[in-house]
Image 1 (cartoon, rainbow, N blue to C red):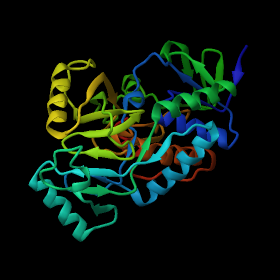
Image 2 (image 1 turned 45 degrees about the vertical axis):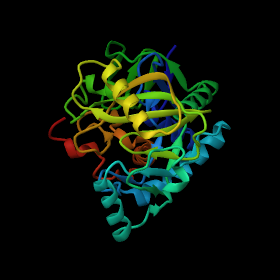
Image 3 (image 1 turned 90 degrees about the vertical axis):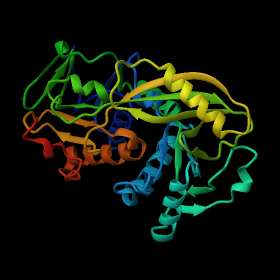
Length: 350
């Protein structure tokens, strides 16, 4: 028997979660197709919202609009699922070099919105501090696994969720409708991370997937009220566990964890920490980043029934709620999507 909804969503990572959240909020009919056995970048991401970026410590793109929107969105969602997923977590910067200290000092003197000084003496029992410390205010940590699974439970209870893998063999479309197995919809929206690169609709978008590895490390005694950043980043995970990650690999042979990364992180932890630690796990994920470091949001320039909300990259925790809501508003009312995120900027290439 055929079922009809207004929208089909493929993937329940960050973008799929937020898109379905806003559809639910507006009482719009939809189904979300998700294969929970597939590797998801969301499941291994750090969950950090940081308003500054880079070695120059500059404000991130559109952060003055995106940050307050994200705060309100996460608070509302955690109330909806009745689980704590959103926490304030200022970033303590343990300057790894004199150059980074000078960059921080320059920025705090010339563009001090999110930065403040902090006394390294308060942290010398925990870290080997050689070049001083600073702090980034208005940073947050999202418990992404709790959030995604909590929202999935809601989707299942409301009969919006389908556990399954999207295959082109099960899919057909016209300019005004789509069909997947026994479900018909007006549009389908792909929120399936790096897997979107395999689709014929979006394989010409300038995806630049990167491989991110992280260790889950037990560090008893270290406060979980902060995120810690030096040559690596230490993010509260649960209980006395921390997510420990560093660089992203743009050129990689496979998706498996590497011994080289583990050894490098272990060495850096020994150089940074004054207290004992224990490596518990080693995780890896592929992020659907892109060359422009801007999202892919909107309707396909040729196929009106096919859309995308993807490519959030390393800033996904802050970008996903904002642009998922923009896509919903565009689909329902025609409100324009931010031109720097709208996939129509690639209309000649797709």
